[in-house]
Length: 165
Image 1: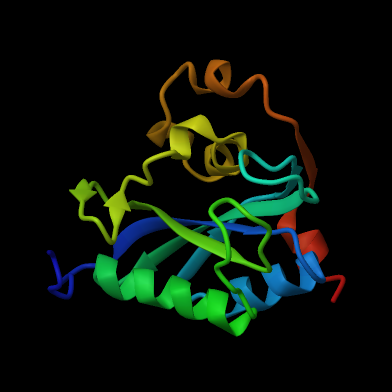
Image 2: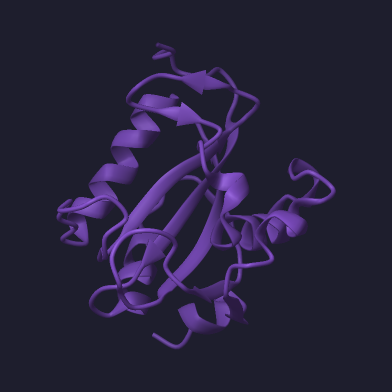
């Protein structure tokens, strides 16, 4: 377990999704509370992947530069979810807010509590499209071929949605 505080800020990426309640407001509040926020991708609407029948999601990715260690960052993500009233009832079920640590510098971690890179990120259009806006150099050249069967629509730049509040 790497619990030491980094001496330099670490470039990390967080994936956000919401499909219950006022999805936009929940995302706006959470993104506004992210420490070390550097950049925010566009906003996407996506069909759910796996799990029960449920409404579509709003998704985005946030790039941060952080001095938090990966476990502190995970706790920060979980606290954002709690603030949004998230209740974990079933795997891949609907949720007010889901915040995942996608990447943390070049760290590879296979802990039962935290896996980095996120174990399914390269299979999810709702992660790859917004991540490609912020850091295309971190994705494999053929990433789009892996997610052609997933419905996704870019709704616009996050700044346009954020300023509408």
